[in-house]
Length: 287
Image (cartoon, rainbow, N blue to C red; front, top):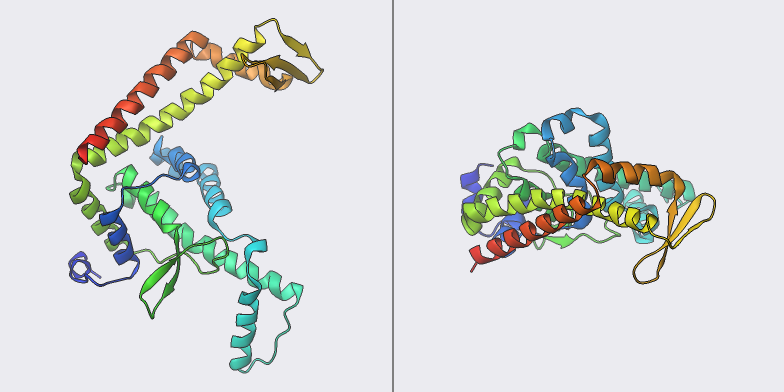
């Protein structure tokens, strides 16, 4: 299907039609889990794509969050499959634990493979023309789509008990959605979204360093208790915080490498202000 054909199908309710409707109606949304995983590839996409471990962890994290869990597969699914088998002349297949296990494996494998198609496309060099914020938005929307209803030509919202695979990928449709987003929000908005995306990655790293710096400050205080493998410290609110002894050298080394606690706090303040400024500028673009 060409991009021109997609444009002409104003009543189309296929995946490209649904994505297009969402693109016209909604500002891209953020899922914290998806953001944290997706950001690992945006740091250095070419080397990340060649790193099997990074890609494996990326897929695994998405599978764990979005692929149906065994306990969420509804019993009605097995009854429906049993009925279909009977109607096709296979007899009355008993719903045993082994039968359920095999069916669940098929459901999960189908969902993993269908989600991997999206992951592979959005993380490959063929999609490098798409801005990071749009790639992120697309994947974030795809994981919300459930089963396609041919009668109503609509997708249901994906729930924790959705057994259907993820929707089929259409690269041409994605190109059109990207173009639509560009037209709707404008180049300035998209560029600011990319800046925010990258700044949030940087913010997350500094935030983690700041948390380590805060703990180092508490360790350097007087109110500490040595409990063997654990050190107990108190924060400013008198809350007791347990710290594993084995983690302390690692934290101190990170803080020292970053220039010390004061330098980390200064960096945290600067990156926080930068993020607020970018978000404010992006909000102004839509007014």
